[in-house]
Image (cartoon, rainbow, N blue to C red; front, side, top):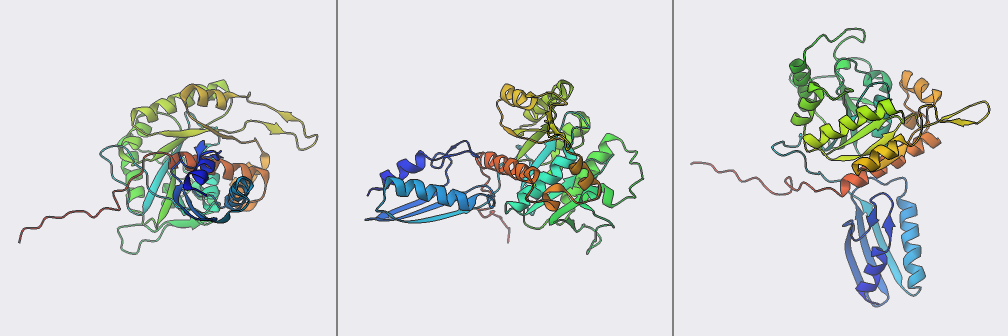
Length: 360
């Protein structure tokens, strides 16, 4: 038995989440061969709690089928590390990766998707938080069932509220729900920056930012000032949504933020009475958008009354019904998104010590 024999099998094992094989995806950290004893260490760069056992089982089976006499020890785990952000920007303390969830227009279910996506990442094993960047129409507190103002131990910084295991911050936690925010663009940008940097985030692997809809000055400025590792575009299959979603993609290109993929929301409606499926807003729009721009279609989500009802009650679908088909779809999307990010350039700046020159 030679190391090359094992490596060839790993090169032939394609991961549907990364879109490449295990070797090319830089997940194989060590291969030791001693006669018939083989030890393999694989470290995935994305949370995979929901599939890691099957992953282990399938890979073990593939190796054993090729080499029945091998005594295999397969060490399979995942580890989330920071990825690079826009030039001239530094990562926020306590946060490894920030992912912006955006849409070209309102009404496509962006906030609902952002909350459930964050919860799905948590279910997959990541320490996750969410920041509500919609200053004019904050909805995250209602969706997570959060009430009361955040604590401040030092009078300068804020402690994140926690809902369904997610650390969260929103302007909606600082003002009454029916109070309108009549602010101009610069005030909005400054408020969001403060919410991000003045919150004591605790060891976050992924911070999901629910951006306000649109691609105006506020959105562009936020993307230029917030260190983002990647972005996700939410759209419906409807042509009028796709037009604006394309603008969102172009905006991220201009500010050097990689788009990790497209999520098509409200892709179909299944009648609860007869079971008939209807594509109310058209079909194939998300896939077309992804193909046109060379990004992944991360997944398609149905239009369901239950999702809306659960969000209004502050009990998001992924938390309320974790085993439901919709929750499983969100977890699949979360894995694909995080795996796509894991293929991007890593940020190792925190590994190296900073050199400080002092004059005696």
